[in-house]
Length: 244
Ligand SMILES: [Zn+2]
Image (cartoon, rainbow, N blue to C red; front, side):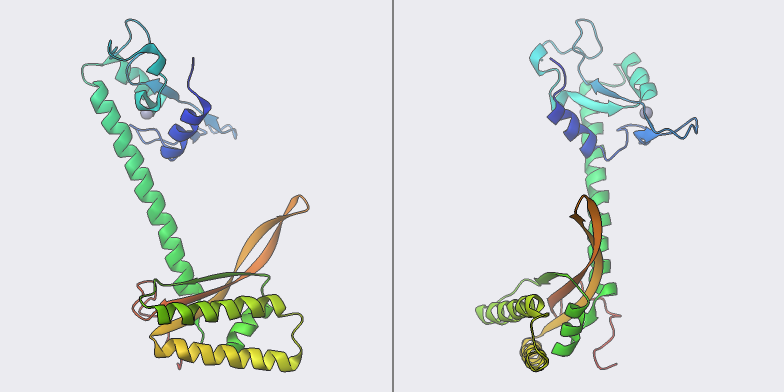
C-alpha cells in the first residue's frame, strides 16, 4: 500500500505549491540556508490507523490512500489539526482542500488568460497590407496563426484562405524571387481588404520562443497572426487605429 505516484502528482499539482490551510509555500527556505526544503505531509483525512483521528469505519483500508482521503498540510497544521479532530471533522477538511484547489485553479487561469490578452494587444500591430506580413515573416522562423470564432461559411472560407496563404508564403519565403514577393504581398493585401469588408481585422507581431535543438534550448522568433472580429474583446480600446 501507499499513496500512488499518480495521486501524489494530482495532489501536489492541484495545490499550486501551497499548503491547503495556512497557504504557506510547499517549497521554502525558512532558515535561509540556500537550500530549498519541502516540509509537509500528505495527510490522511480519515486516519488509516485503528485509533487515529477521524477514523471512519466505513472507509475500507485499501481506500485510505485515495485522493479523496488526502490533503497537503505543513507539519504544524498537520499536528494541530490531528490534535483537534472535533474541530476538524473529515467533511471540513475536504471542503478546505477543495476550496484551496478551486482558488489555485482560478489564480492560474487568471494569470495565463491575462498573459494571452497582453500578447494580443500589446505585442500585435494592426496589419493593413501584405508587405507588413511579409516583413514579419522574414524576421521569424515559425508561425502561430489564429482567429476569432466565425459566424458564417463565407467568413470561414475567407479566413481559411488568408491564413493558408500566410502559412504558404512563410514556408516559401526563402524561395520566392523578388517578383514573387511583390505578388505575394499584393495577394495578402487583397485578402486583408476582403476580410475588413466582413468586419474582420488582421493583427500581427513576433514573439521569442525556445525550441529544443541538439540538447540545448535554442531561441527562435515566432510570427503571430490573428484575424479578429472588430468586436473581439481581446482588441483593447487603446490599440491605435491603422491610419494613425
Ligand atoms: Zn500549515
